[in-house]
Every structure is written in C-alpha cells, then in structure tokens.
Length: 402
Image (cartoon, rainbow, N blue to C red; front, side, top):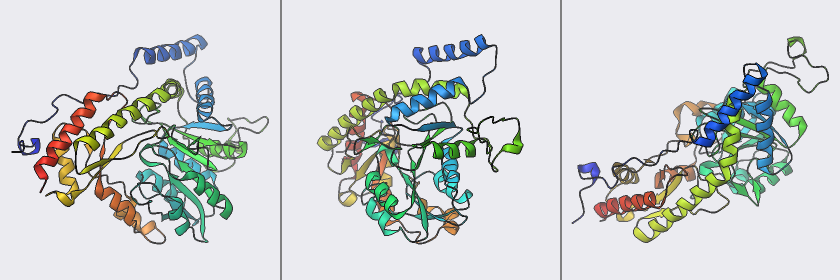
C-alpha cells in the first residue's frame, strides 16, 4: 500500500530546509567588502557610481564573455532591457518579436519604449523560441527581436542572429537567466546587437539585491546604451562636462548601478564558473536519479553549455489519476522546493493582450508549461538533495498511478 502523502497528512520525505544559497556572506565575500570600504576610506570619499569599481567590474564582465566589447552596469535587469531597447532608437510603433516565456519586465520594456510586441511561440517541448518560430512571425513591419534564453539554456541564437542580420532586423539578447551559457561555443550575449543581463540576488551571477548589465560588441552601441542609462549624457565627447545639462543629447533616466554593487559583482564573477559546474553536476545526478527511480517523470537534458537557473521536469499524466499541477503540489508538500505551475507565459497575461500585434496564442509555450514543473535549487545542492527529490517524486507517483 502506498504511503500517505504529506499533502494528505503523512510524514514528508524531507523535513529539514533545503540548502540556502548564501551567495554574499562567505569569508572571501566579506574580505571583498572590507577591501571596498578601505579603498574609499583611503580616498576620503563616499562611494557613488561610475567610478573605480564599476570600471573594474565592467572590464571583468567583458573578459568573462570572452570577446571584445563594452559593458555598463545598471540598476536592474529590467532597466537593462529598457535601456537596450531605447538604444535601438526605433520609430514609435515599430514591431518587436518577443520570446513567449519570460518575466513581465521583458515585454514591459518593449511597451514602455512605445514599441509593439509580437509574441513568438517556443520550440516544441522547450520554453525558448527557435529559429523556425522566429521565421514564422518575422513580418515586414518587424524591426527588432528580443530573444530570451530561459531557464539557463541558450535559445537557437546563432541561426536566429544570422536570420536577423540577413533581414536587417536588430537583435537584443535577454540573458537574465543564462549567465555563462553558450551556443556554438560562444557565450550568450555575444550574438546580438546589444544584450541585457539581470544580476539580482537569485541569478548565477549577482551584484546584490538588484542589478543589471548591458553589453555591446561595438563602441557606437555602447555609447547609445550608456547615454540612455544616464540621462542622455554624451560622456565620450571631448571636454564633456556632466555638470552642464545643456550638452545632453536626449531625455533619459538615471539607471546607474552603485559602486558597492559592482564590488559584489566582481566577487560573483570570480565564482561563476564554479557555480555553473556545481549546478550542472547536481542536475546530472538528479536527472539520472529520476530516470532510474520514476516511470512518469523526465528531467530536462543538461550539458556543459548550460548555466541552469531552474530545472524543468516533465510529467506524463496519462498513467496518473491527477493533473501535473496536483502532482507537483504533492511533491512540494514532501519538502521539495519547486514552482508547480510556471505562470510566465506572456500570452496568458490579460493586461498584455491590448498591446500585442498579431496572434496572441503561443500553444507550444502553453503546452510546455502544462507538462512541466520546475525544481528550484542552487549550487550548494548535493547528492543528498538529489536523492530526496527523487524519493519524493517516486512517492507521489506511487500514490497517483492508475
């Protein structure tokens, strides 16, 4: 007889807390902060922005991408997307293709730049748009694409970038969930005209509570990005005086990131390769355990090209007496951190529909959401956590098998 599920009053598989990430409180992290405060104490100055640590951080960020280019640190990932789209300087009402599974900040950045979002669908079985989906909706009025690399896996960005270039369409990469992920051997963020990254505290690379980065391969795009991130300042012009607003170029807000956040970002960048390796190793163990220990669940394939952010698990409900959502809620009650029903499918948000051009339907994206739940984890998860997750899934599966 199957054990009583925790959701029905039974004892959960795991009663202790899952490992916290604690990304900013290690001994080496504290040393970085001590050095930062000593630097400004030695200068007899308060820290602000656009100073020593931002220069060091943005230079290190570009080195980490492995290409020549220019980065600017901004206040949030949403700000990075807003600035990236503003820098395109597209005519009001221009159409922009947008990935179907993303944060509201992505599509809001399009709308608030007076542009018109056109929803892409995702490639079957994934949250990311593929080249076929882009080609399907790349109409004559489309001027740009915002391509999201969801869940830490690169979209088909190489072919999409080549298609966009051939059609004269600009490409913005949203790399917020995929720091360090690669496609065709190159890191995400290096394929498009401009790229935006979120560096909020949950991301694999973080600058603190909130933060973001914009990136461009060319100096011209960098100038545009930085001016739109800092009140229209033409900082690159000889003799520029930032105390003289009569020389500023256009209306823009202040999206600067502070120096302390940049110091945290430097430390986080150092840890990023190890963070990715630890996450991939954990998910390899988890996927193998799911394959060996369950009949109805399939873990998403993982490779060294990924930088996992959350981990989708597919549930085949044909042999179960429950829905995917009910299955996932039962697993969560067993002490497993997860999102049972990922609501970040843009086509399902009532508030966004009046702003869309073209079809508002994204059946592949909806189908992906309906078939998957997402494990939440961090780089400190080990084999013990993988074993508990598999045990919980297997327990729930036994209870709901027909």
